Amino acid sequence: GSLTDASINAAFDEFDANHSGQLDARELRDALRHLGVETNTLEAARMLRTFDTDGSGMIERGEFLLIVRRLLIMRAEGAAGGGGC
Image (cartoon, rainbow, N blue to C red; front, side, top):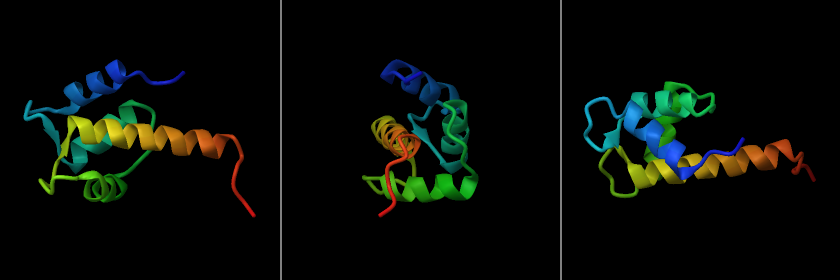
């Protein structure tokens, strides 16, 4: 099933262990895994650098929503078998 903003926000809250409103790379990895995205710490750190629009070194809620939406789009495109040339 598709993830709603509410479920994505709930995952953010669950893995924002210190309630800072931000996720570090490890928390990001765990939150993504909870949402069914298989990732490791290195990939999570790479995503953090890519989507950390304010340069804080952390992922804020809005940035997390962007990451999850982008991953879902990529997964849908991969599942549709598009690609190749």
